[in-house]
Length: 195
Image (cartoon, rainbow, N blue to C red; front, side, top):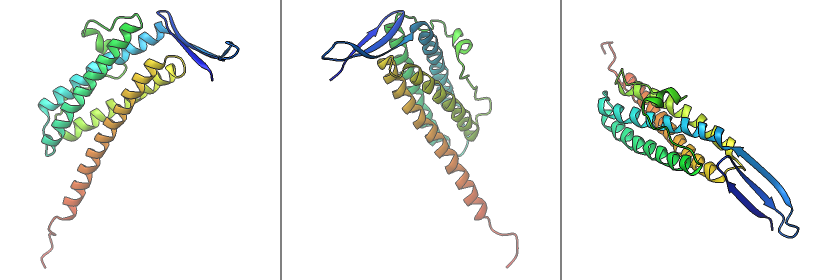
């Protein structure tokens, strides 16, 4: 049975699978922590922006599905904040520093903050769906980067990726329900013809 050795170093993180009998390496891999810390800080900034996008959206939302969606926005805001906390801890464990100035979040993030300038529920759902799809790409990138090299960061990013996929599905379901409801209402309109 092979032995696995993991080195979460400050410059590089790596692993080595060692043959238990011969103590010779069978397989190894490494990841540059500087590049990983850059990507993790980008994700950290994106999570803070996502948190605020959900939180402020819940405050200003309007439309027929407002009360249902408002609660989901608050739930998702809490989860995005939790993701930021997990990323901050991991960044520190790897010898880095999470972005300290909120003014730098938008400069650093690839997944941008979308202000709820039109607070209609469908508009906000579409904005958040776009944001979740960007986040899914980000965490797939981190998973790919860390697979077989940094097990802890891979585990964290995979867990966040799973939640982001759930968020995407939530917004797709809401949008489909609204579309179905509108179509049903349209079909149930009384006809203009006299009987």
